[in-house]
Image (cartoon, rainbow, N blue to C red):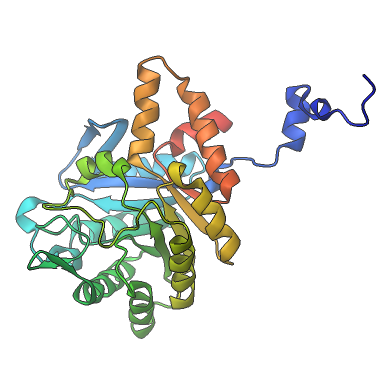
Length: 324
């Protein structure tokens, strides 16, 4: 055959493939989620997330120092609230001496340059396990938004660089931005969970924080996975309300959404490679059905290729070691 062009020339060996690769993973791409619990010297493996742990605050600080040494520069904090501190309004979320607030301060003291993002939602603190206040079996939007705004200010006061509202209440980005401005936290960013879908893949995360809904599901506020245009609408609204980063969650079943949102907004886009996605790779690798390291690299590359500027993932430490 005589061909004008042979595309396989650019795939011939590892050197040329590296030179022409369109998507490259670096440590700068990753956000590391951390689960924090009360106590001292606690390191608890999460049964449904093999190899991932809940840490007490002292061990969290040690882990953050290790992350920094690997070149990972951003953490996303989640705290496990004691059952006796939970109530209908998630009041513990506003405690200036609460576990989240103490964690922010301790990490900033230990590794001042580490970028700290904080989860802003009521489900870890709610006796009902929902992201909003429940009244007569209904999740109440506006009352919840007021609490979320106060929660964001509390995190900013403790030293958070970004607050990350994951609740999907209407109007919360505008309310949070206003609250931050009114309290002179003009340097605190907002990473909005703009397109967060009601997904079956959140199960291990809810195990990690004991935050499963006490009744029903979250489909009245999280998005319907049948919808794509709605995600773009939600993202654009959050941009208009003052978000600094737009998030799509989950990632793997929503690669098309990541691309649609990336094309629609002029802000950085993040994606959350969630607990169920992590658990599937771990389970498949344990059974010998897939190569774990190859699956990690291919999965995270696909998320970045889809348009994510940053990826929250439980594989952050693994992938940094693989790419180094």
